[in-house]
Image (cartoon, rainbow, N blue to C red; front, side, top):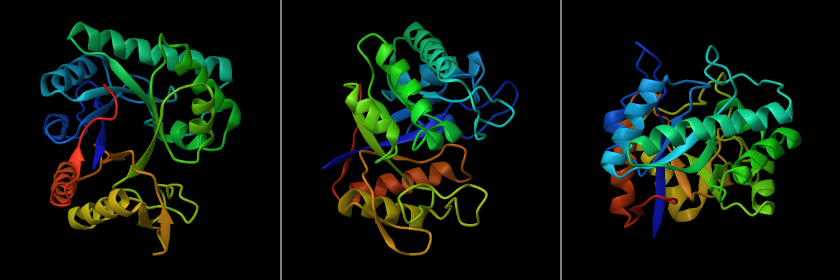
Length: 252
């Protein structure tokens, strides 16, 4: 049995560093690299994709709203045509940087508020799908199982991969608990590792009220900006190895 382990990386900006990308790239199999809209300046992104190539980690474009101040975690009521162009722009920018160091963008994962909006927002979900489908050959997409985004992507002929979250709490309907609610983000490496083992082996996670919820874990995310992220990722990887689960990228 195998599963992908991913993390959001390249989210520093200029003199500000966010997370330990170097250490995380030694643990994960896929890197969701920021594209400059919610985070990441060109030099940070270039260094991140170069490090990913050197470590054999698959590169994904983490596309988001044009919202540096809000870190892409605020909903933006952008018109679908503009959102489609924004997504294409971000993929192209990151792919250009990646190709300059011998890599390429191999998949797309929306970030933050965009990720959550297109679970239900039909027009924005369709815009993101249209952008990814317009990329030569299309690209696999990573998203929340049951979302409109993944449904529309599958209908468009894209490969879809359901994502589970190691360090985020779930609601009873399988969506993520908003970050401003107590308990929305988890920090204990042992707890997180045990949750991921159960997600991968049994397809189950306890929601924020302790009730079991079905999850699909084609890929598991450990957020790179979460305090203690590297320790959590290492604990997850060790728990998976102990359960004879191999960590391999879903794209490449």
